[in-house]
Image (cartoon, rainbow, N blue to C red):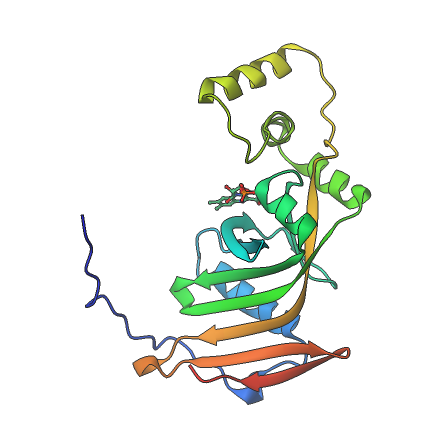
Length: 210
Ligand SMILES: Cc1cc2nc3c(=O)[nH]c(=O)nc-3n(C[C@H](O)[C@H](O)[C@H](O)COP(=O)(O)O)c2cc1C
């Protein structure tokens, strides 16, 4: 079955991004946009596409932003998963947020650094019990024979009084950004694109052509 979407086009008119509105630090603009996304009831506003590379081949998947701290953008995952092993070999990553309701996109490029075990423990212990157990029993990204294999692992785990402790193979990464682009959809495809680039400790600001 083929799809022809040539005539699927929206005009973007909800907002504008001007140089005189820009904070010096891109995290301040990100927080401001994030609040707008939450206030506009964007579903899963913290969902972001994470791209990694292995041998020059990219792969992408959605993960959830759990924190923006002084260093960068924090998410949690299985360190032995496909993304985890790709980051181990090459920690250059990209993140992408698309908030359709706001006609906004944010593109982040940087490098992923594993969180300390103390920080990962703290987040793991804050998760609902079921999520903690799933993280323990699921060999993320490995081929498994069936769904039943997983539900049986879960039942076996729950039948014993196992300690509910963060496995060493599960934890957080912080994505330390080197550049952050803010894209605001505008009418007639003349969109606003402002990119912050971190050079020698200073955030430089440029406008890009749409
Ligand atoms: C909305 C949404 C949120 C997700 N959040 C996470 C997450 O925070 N961490 C995670 O490891 N996987 C998350 N996933 C699952 C990943 O997209 C992916 O399937 C999984 O991490 C395995 O990816 P990998 O095999 O490339 O390592 C999420 C998926 C969706 C659709």
